[in-house]
Figure (cartoon, rainbow, N blue to C red):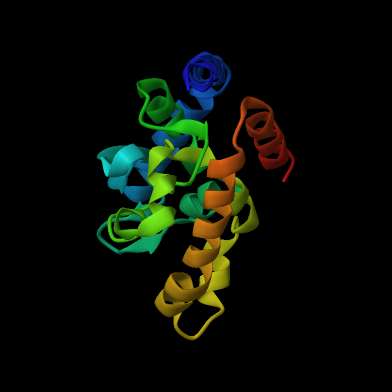
Length: 182
């Protein structure tokens, strides 16, 4: 949808204009905190199942395999996600859409659920709002992978499929505002 792309392009430029300095500052602090370059990249599944590289501010020390003090702040505040404004600018992502996942989830969907892959992955979604504390939730269960695969991921698929059938610019704006105020 061309209107959505224009919206994403314009507002990613505006957001980078206002928040670019925060991204740079966080990358600088993360570089010191993690003792490595402060940008984290990872392969994710995008629109039509194509792989792309997502950008985040690094929150873990690679040598120690632990989340750093600043990384905890970044994750809690979601500031680690701000570099994805560049993914939106590039056209890999949208402001609103299913959160991009690592290979082995969305790319394995079958039947009607594969319609989700027609959407660009997003910086936010109803599912990401609902599961904004997913990491904490998974830490509270006995078998996190099982709980994710059998409870959380199917619920996200259901919510993202609902978005697929109902998405429009007004709904996107509502989700963005809801994200800001949550």
